[in-house]
Length: 292
Image (cartoon, rainbow, N blue to C red; front, top):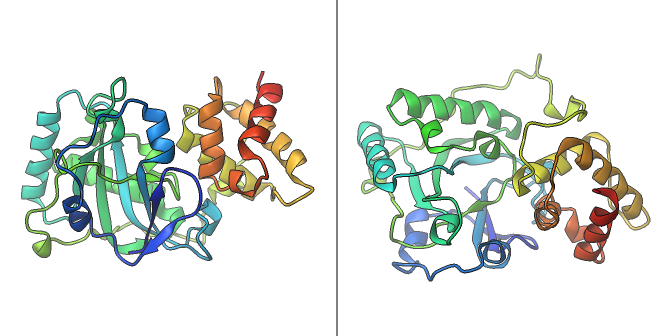
């Protein structure tokens, strides 16, 4: 597996041939220092990765994702961490699947998701990015059948289905669970297949009316990438002002109550902000004028 990771949400990725989660965790402190400003930490300090090969270069965007080699579940409503650990260990004992569990920055910072957690399942075979929604549903059902209902912990399935989404790496050894017998475990192989003869890409659907998604960074980034690809919107010199205006019009129709800080992060995650001369200034100016 190739993993693309960096510090914070800005810029391109570095490349490593294999993301060895256990080795990475062993390099971490036992306890992470308290996080006072969660949003600032996520933007400039948190470590992220995308378990995917890229088609060309190091730009992470939906259009540049060649495949998906791992699936991550964000668990946002973990009211009892001990209960989650018990169910995770039970699932690990029942199955031979390689999987990992760790707390998110929100669980360490004050005012974040209570015990917010992340479950990572590396895949035995890479899958086509368009198969990701089916793969997420397949794994969710597999866990439920095994007695581990991710939905009861607030699993954000839409975030898991967002291609090229940034995924936060573990922060500390405490409350990070790795397989004790990883050499004897198997990486899960997705059983679903992509039927190209009757397949209709999500890119072909019209983005009209209100979306049910919340205006999170991940949801807006996914929308920006899909909308730009469908309508062939580019941000070359001389096109940027008009392209941003079109994109803001679509975002306004799709989401309510957009936070300007999240919007800037979404444009970075979608790979658009990096193409602008003054991204934060340009995006903020458009937001103030067009998202009233």
